[in-house]
Length: 132
Image (cartoon, rainbow, N blue to C red; front, side, top):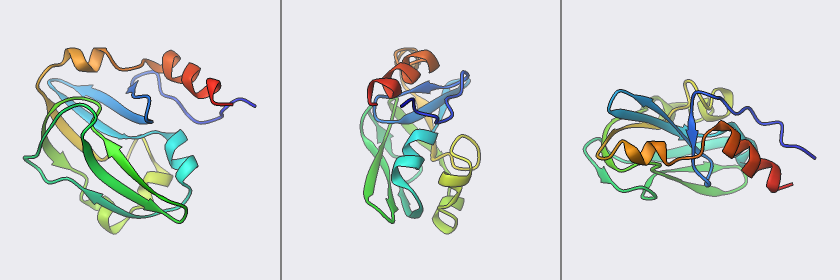
């Protein structure tokens, strides 16, 4: 059975189901449509603070759903320059709009080549289809 989650061509992806979108020297990050489907209804979110320095793979937030608690990892290293505080009052935005209103943080990248090393849309689709 193929995975029917939305995968956008303008984003890069991690093996752990985070997405990143380059915005100049920054990367806006969030969890993928596939991840929010796996988690089901997200009821609580905890985000890192602006100014936090992160390396790729560092935890930048946690989401709690009716099923489980999951960590959100940084796809790139740098400094968190913005977080989506609206998620704390409206965690359902993850489920409603994972690539829009459900973004998690903006990271000022230390090394933009890390972004280039993330999976492209075709690579991420391939990874999703391997799981079936």
